[in-house]
Length: 265
Image 1 (cartoon, one colour):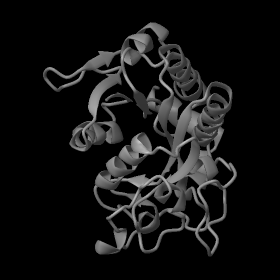
Image 2 (cartoon, helix red, strand yellow):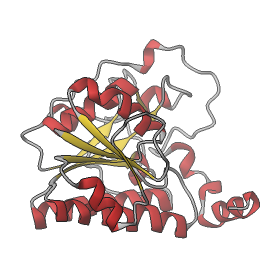
Image 3 (cartoon, one colour):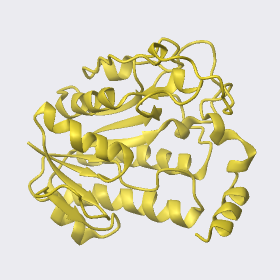
């Protein structure tokens, strides 16, 4: 079956473009940037352009939706990419008769949640730490609506720290290895039991804060563990809240807007 992968030129998108065909999936990729791969089935377009999305969704069986603003930004940027763009993606899927969506949410949808002593379940209620986190809560809620209203099957992946190796001490708990990420997405695409699911997208980290149970119910069995790496010494991120550094004062609305102003964006 052909799967549409949006945001294919991003960090996670590039990784999945390389790894998902190994699970037997034929990919069509979508991004605002051209694909460097010669002969790739790739659609260039904006996420807010219904015509480009209709072209991308023609003949596919499922969507892995990664496209959008990948970190905190001023509200107009977040609103255009992560709210309007995500809505347009779901609508285009509905028009095309595509009913399975794997949606890239984030741990920042619940970032102000205290870490606690027990593993947090994947359906931990929203407590976003940024406008970016708010946009991910919106995407989760939109997925729930399309499940109940239109019979979609939606997996919302609350992604931890995606990297080749854990970059800091917090990532000893939140790390998601690229190979495990591909395995999780494949599990969500294959599962016969998926209706609507919130899933912590992390590896089998010995020191994890978050429960793997929801992903395991869909067949996800991660194999990597952040504890196999030496524990980094430096750790600027707070460890008492799920969102880490994103909960710090310099991620407030005014502070982010000022940084964008200074950077000329």
